[in-house]
Image (cartoon, rainbow, N blue to C red):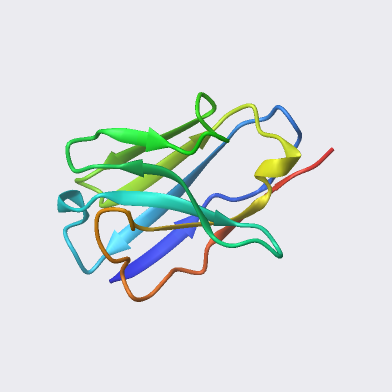
Length: 117
């Protein structure tokens, strides 16, 4: 399995950004997938997840601001992030939803989101 995240950038507080995760080596549509983030000195945390049936759930910290979606034909997972705050700054990774099964063994390189004025 290969996971390639992209789209991270420097944005101002209150701004928006969409990041993407291209999945290869599997048919991603049959798996519950998730976005995680890790800020320096913090543990990696799950921020959003999406089931094969497109049921979504979010961490309390991002609920109402982030939207996860998927395009199974493209084997791509997206995370639309709105009303960004400094606290959202982190490296973002995608992988299998670890609450329903083990993550795939290899993580991608992540994509850096920095929120700063």
